[in-house]
Amino acid sequence: MKHSNCLPTALVSTLPEVRRSSEEGVPSAGGAGRGSVGTGGQPAPVLPAASGGRLKKDLARRLTLGVLGLASALVSIGGCGRPKSEPAPPPREDKVVIFAAASLREAFESMADEFRKSHPSVTVTFNFAGTQEIRTQLEQGAQADVFASADERHMKALRDAGRVEAPTVFVENEPVIVVAKEKANVIRALSDLPTAERIVIGTPEVPIGKYTLQILDKATRALGSDFRARVEARVVSRELNVRQVLTKVKLGEADAGIGYRSDVSSAGDKISVVTIPPEINVIAKYPIAVVLHAPHTGLAREWVALALSNDGQDILRRFGFKGPSIAEAAR
Image (cartoon, rainbow, N blue to C red; front, side, top):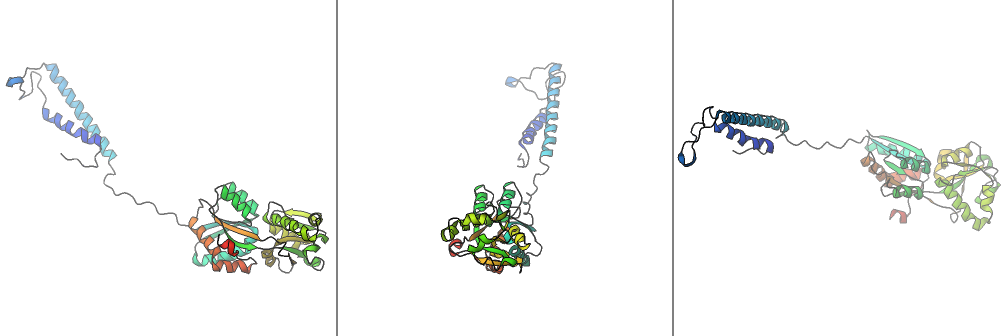
């Protein structure tokens, strides 16, 4: 008898046993079963009544085990023969979360309008803050899809920690001196900065704060070894992001500060801008990366692609950023 491959071994092994037991017959209480033949064709010896009883019990036990095995097997093969279910489709991505340096606010909000043209049902959510704050949030497990940094140092730390994929420098920014309108005739060059009564800069952990100190160090070669010390003597506040530097100058709480050229457009006519000589200035490089194991990886990659595309670069330039240098673009 050929058994289906769907039947478990336990069931198949009970079937011959049950069949064989049913074919053997049950001996009567007074002798051997009908047709019993002994050695050499002689009639088999008559078994005592007790022997027949044992055979009955043995047959009953076999039948019982067979029935139990059959019942168990039927339960186990309840799904036999059903087609295998198809794998569940990946969840539909309808949201992308972007953590970005504060200086990218207006440019990225404008890029979101462009992104929605091809993704009308997608929600774009931003978290703008100082780059060092965002790095800390990601290190502590904050859920995001994209990280755009205002410097390479903090991005490298996250890359080394296995929190982001390989980054790409997508834009550059130029530090400038931002001056309160009422001081515009007094502070007209970098060399005039020590004449300000109140200066505000970023903390050393913030990219703009780090760039500021590098600029002051480079300026000492041209403007005197004490130039950095004279500027720092006028510093009344060190801020956690570049927008706080700009706000204090706009509100008249400081005479001058160092921020990014991209921030000037958001300040309107409340400040004036002094360009830092290129031989002294430090160009800020902005890398962007998909967060490792991002909840919405597909949309994250599309956002990065937009930032690197001609359309994305046009938007960034409108807000005072510069495209990456040829060397950076080739990396």
